[in-house]
Image (tube, rainbow, N blue to C red):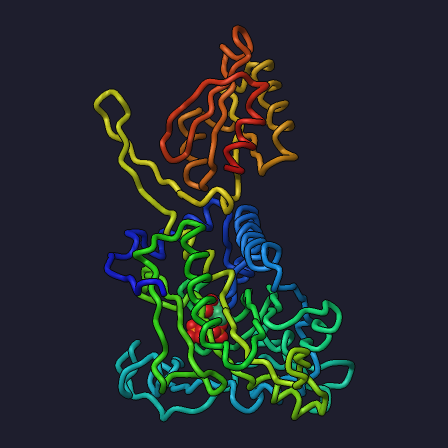
Length: 449
Ligand code: ATP
């Protein structure tokens, strides 16, 4: 097992700085901002969608495409409400909630200490249970018979499709079903930017195993998922594993370990890996009357598989990747003067823009044309940006701040003398001069190495 880490200070960046950068550069905007926004709801801007897509793709690549024992699924957000009765969500997907009698703010009872309001010091009410599922109505009649729910997790879509997937793919145990998609929870206290929102994206795997092998598979998945965050650049010292105490385990869980990240708000869950046993399949068998057992050819027995569930959040990991990548560097300008640059050291697979092509002089048509042609040549192979809206120093700063891996500068020498350009590395700021005809293969090689 990996070591439990956690002896390091959080990244120096504050949440306010991340929020400001995200808005200014087009990663994340407040949703409905021109109308004053709506509680803890965010829209992803041009760079945010690219980053999010890259995180999803990396997750899918590693957890589905690279494995012979995991297949994908995309289940509906609104499904038969009986699913949520069987899963226990209708009766029990609740958080204890307390209200302040003075300022009327609402808190999760397990997020406050004692019965004093953390906002104003007023008296809090007794805790009441609050169901976090969003309700809606299917069809034209808004009566109770037409009630449906927005899914609060993607997991159940995979349990109810267990038989379909197993029969269609002929997979033998152990095998998993993976899904990325939106989930909705009417959180009592959302907040901390995209850390906790009411609409969010989950990336979950239900990995079905033979009973008796579950503990071993649980360990393997904890290790795998921990390594995944490190592979994409999270500082290992800011990651730790936290096994749940027996009294905090969810009712379906035999054991759960959270992967926690040291956010600016302190250690908080990034992903949970639970041993859900045969709880869910058995519940769906009971409620649907369908046989969801697995026929084990080796023994001739029909068994109900156990399930290991790694459950992470795309938005929450995007926040962690941004925070971990953020750095304000003091750099030597060479003439004894110091300068500051903000840089996102995002992993090359995640960086929303891989390369920016920058003409040194935007009033020299040959330079502009050469730069635009080079950008067009690179575009089919990697996310490419062309920018000529400022001086080169400023353009570099702007690209550093969004994590662009390389800046290519086309200058007078390129068009008048040598047909060569400079490639500047984001992290080292080193520049190399190479023939323009080699740029594409050099960058493809760097991306794939
Ligand atoms: P928490 O204790 O933070 O409420 P949870 O244990 O209820 O989370 P799970 O049901 O295990 O969360 O969901 C799996 C993952 O989905 C979480 O680790 C997190 O990354 C993400 N997630 C859950 N709720 C939210 C939310 N409201 N906003 C953003 N991401 C979320």
